[in-house]
Length: 134
Image (cartoon, rainbow, N blue to C red; front, side, top):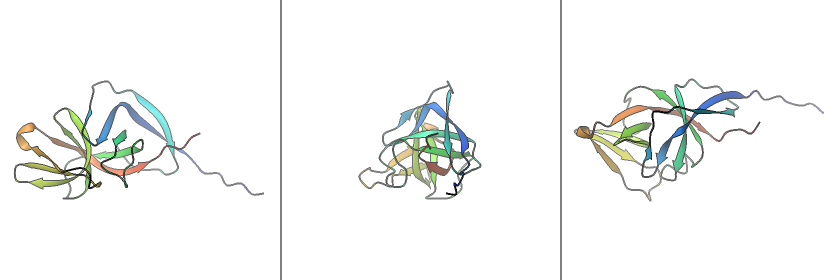
């Protein structure tokens, strides 16, 4: 019987920082990581956990999000957003006076992050996955 070997790629996920797919998740200055594995290799800057259900069915609670740090590219892309000391994963639309944060799950209302709240785009979500057990 022929066995196929699938290479695994290591991802270091921020352990104390999660992207909230819901009402917001606090973020900290302590950056401990946990090593997990996936079966594809992606270019990314930071990885973190997704918590909550507002971005389902595409982004699931307990998955890892890979983030490419940078600014705003275009309306409707999914970004990691820092706002009021919370981190969110949302579809983002640039408005005249801030960002409109939109959930994929229609059970969650839009949020508005006004410019005066110093909200910022952390980066674009380039991939999400459930870690592979080794």
